[in-house]
Length: 197
Image (tube, rainbow, N blue to C red; front, side):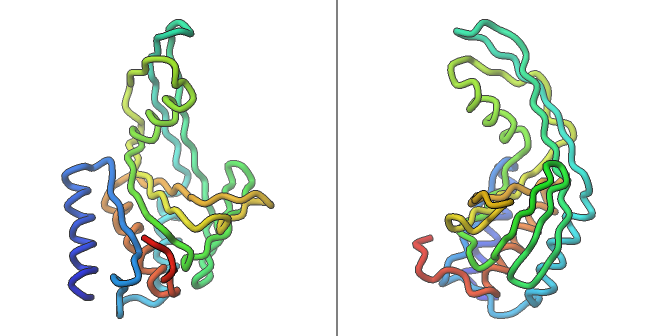
């Protein structure tokens, strides 16, 4: 592992300790790993961590007040992925909405770790941008979301295109390890040397 990549991963870990709601990793071409687990080992690790988590369900409530009056908003998060690793290609079947997602690790642009509470607040705020919003309860159970962003249209779901994927975990150590594994998979699959990370 070279010094720049070691420094990057150390920075991610420090950021996670200081700001547990957010971390960021860029798979830049000048910070590539030269050794470590193979792509099959890496892909299988990511798959196994998703399977271990199983079905993820979380709930939170927010109060709102403003032009639309006042009340309570319910937030629900559910994730039920069945992963199929295949080297640099990674297939996910979301049983929650009968959706197939095809991932190409070589097209990774960015990986973030976002707390479930932050995700819930931002989702509620986006849908209710004209009112004041306050959390009434924490997200239960606590979640840490690995958000992987890819180049445009690299994720296809039953004909529809999307460029980001959220995978939830119940502890931030697992989320951090999976995010590092995704960056490593990008490294092993060639990455995007022409992408201005």
